[in-house]
Image 1: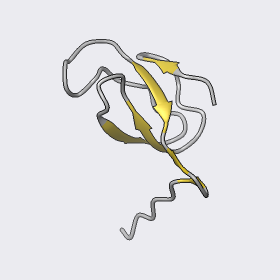
Image 2: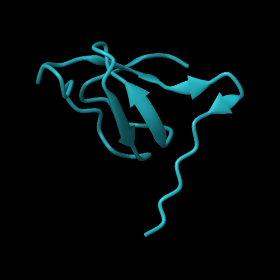
Image 3: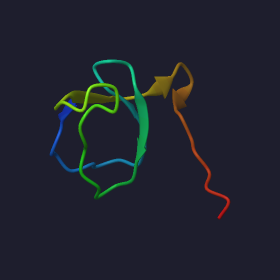
Image 4: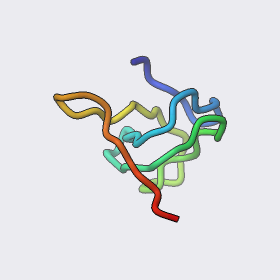
Length: 60
């Protein structure tokens, strides 16, 4: 999957990693934010496990 820059729209719900390694959960349609570690614009990549995408279940 290609990297995404701050300000781009999220096209797939899931966990993403910033350039500094910070993890953040985004939902489809949201906008990628700045890096939580630096407050600066960053590039985000989708975090995946060897067996496939990381699943997150919201119980509420």
